[in-house]
Amino acid sequence: MYSNEISLPCEPAPNVKQTATQSVAYDAAPATRFHLLVAIAAAGGQFADGYVLGTIGIALSLATDSLHLGAAWLGALGGASLAGIFIGSLFLAPLADRFGRRPLMIPTMAVFAVISVAQFFVTAPWQLFVLRLLLGLALGIDYVVCCTVVAEFSPTRSRGRLLTLLVFTWTVGYTIAFILGTLLASNIADAWRWILISSAVPSAIVFLFRLAIPESPTWLMQRGRTADARRIVTRHFGERVDLPAVLSTPSQSTRASWAELFSTRYRRRTLVGAVFYTAQVIPYFAVSTFIPIVLSALGISSAYLGGVVFNTFMLIGAGFGLWVIDKITRRQFLLTGFYFTGAILLFIAFVRLEPLPTVIAVAMFAFVMAASTSLIYTYLPELFPTRLRASGVGVGTAISRVGAAMSTFLLPACMELWGIRATLLVCAGVLLIGGVACQAFAPETRGRSIEDV
Image (cartoon, rainbow, N blue to C red; front, side):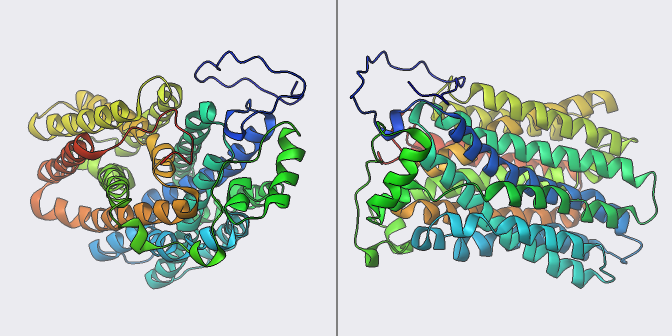
């Protein structure tokens, strides 16, 4: 019936017989190659995003002497991209609710490529800081728009897997960046420059790939552009697939409204999205950005090798998250991730281990943390309706980046002042607070229509 239909590992499809003239609901249609194409185009951006952020930790450790970096500059440069993400996701990405998803999704990778090349030529810390801040602006837009586009194109039964693919490829990019950076560090002079410029390659490739992605039919229907939506749905999914069921609203009311996000109707979802995202990324970025430094403080002599182990288990954990996303409920996934990672950090902080058991414990933290972050791109867009989706995801992303930027900036200073174990206790406390908050307030969204808020 559908020539480009594919089979995705997800929940079994309902047993519905279809006649030659029977229509199929937009979010109940079979997954096709085009659904996968959209997910790959978005995931390619996440690969580039993860690669960009994954390069900075090892690059800074190598550039310390060349750029004369003290603790303050290390923290500022480590958090610059995260600060840019805050601005981009809060003030720029919500423009996708007003002007469409495609106008913001297409150019971000070109910006990535240009700035990546510019990093090669920096001669002072402030120059690198400005470039990393600009990269963060583009990252903030890309985070929000990519998960929004995939959520709006995906059938309900396949949405979790397709969205989780974004997190998986982000982790792949992050891991490859660390491994490649480690290899370059031992083989060429000024390796940190080549590590930073290398992110231009995946960014340029993804930019070209995204040119084939059309506007979201769900957004078009919400703006009343039925003919445009019908043309896209017919071309990519077939004539018998219905248009998305979205309530059209006047153009003046489609502007993303922060007031509405914090109104009585939506404020619980807005706060849940912000709290769960922030509580996950604070320890994630604080530990992973400076993993060689963290491992050295824990007594690991081969800190870079330990970092490779850490990032490898992050990749394995992200793959596990991709596999398990539709096998348990969203709430079960949320709570398990928070409580397990919190417990592991408490164990590392309180129990003094030999180097090998320490690396194993840190690797287990990386595995569970990466698996639990699979929910970020799946759960966050499911919390909001179409007219507010980019804005809601943007607010959650922005708030999370405040926490992530602060933790990245403060981690070197906290380790210097309190020591590594007290610092890990703080990270564990953040995770446990996130778990308690989600247990009390997080709604279940699995298996529901993208508009069923």
